[in-house]
Image (cartoon, rainbow, N blue to C red; front, side):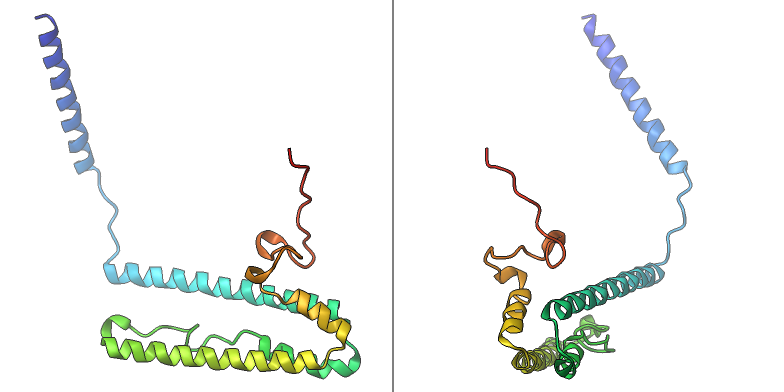
Length: 186
């Protein structure tokens, strides 16, 4: 029976400590929370800033890849107009007010048919832009000599379609960034 009183003391002490910590937490002043609308506006501003930074990084990487391709192709002065036309068409579009890369309308305020129609319009815009890029690529490709066409073929294969003949562009590998040497299998 000597263990019973000690068990009660331990339980009582744990209850007192728990109550004390709850009372202390209740008395600690909490920082005033931002109104929900202000918090959403802050989140939206942060999201916009991150998206702008992302777009800037993507545009810089696109420009670097285009310059690397141009260097590897060793274009002649006669091919420069075709290159400029190709490069202009391949440059990602600027952000639009209401497009696939712009501000999205308030989908919560739209009916389902309205949302579907907006998505159909975006899809049609993307398909049109893709078709124009493909036509520009074919036109530029025809301006290249066979040796340049081989370089173009090798350098423009999307990473997910590569077959081990060249390292993927992921993880810093790609033109100018060779894949690390693999050690002997052990």
